[in-house]
Image (cartoon, rainbow, N blue to C red):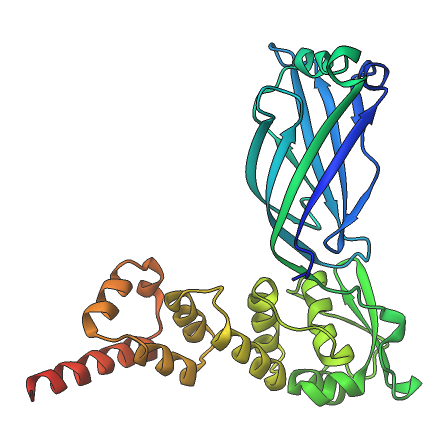
Length: 316
């Protein structure tokens, strides 16, 4: 989260009559809140009511995975009471711009350019309040540790390749230890195909075990847990468990479902004990469709929790 999370992007369109005559205008790039911002307005010729479409784009120049969640008020000045529209938006590496859908006529925008009204200038503001943000650096594959050149191996994931060190993977994973040094066909190969994983998700895993600069977030938690379980990486599982225990990004039933899925018994028992009464526990479980898919072990733990609470009440 950035310290300067509240700011105003003030876009002054000078020589507005000539600029808007082209049917489109773009602002310069604003650098605020740790991100790059650009505003765009264009005439929507396909709209039957002569609409002006406004866009605000957000970008993380450093690349990598990122997100920026913000409340944004879009204001056009010098209209009656300053026309405005407020929205809640989440930008990320896949969704870099937002269109403000509320109808505003292009002809009204053009009227603002008159010298009488505003000296051939249109002023548009985007008042931004960043609620939360994450920026994860790009993993420089060329800088992955390589204790000795003979230990290097190339992992093939789909159509992409990553060169890593066998030794570092083996330290963290019995799965890779068996693959590289056990009685498997991959032993001794320079290239090994890894099936059933997403390339970008696997890069997040490499961040954790090689570079040690990445922290698990609510966004990365589920695929990190899946990969750590798949490759038997206990140290990564412990990091994921710590984040899951502390985060407020998942409610208690979602946490309970994750704990059941990955056999996190201490967390499961802790979550069951967090309910102040059996009534609360039963009410929440009844409202959670995932509960029907709990394992036999978790269902037994829930039954024991209810039975013990009922037994205590009967003794009062």
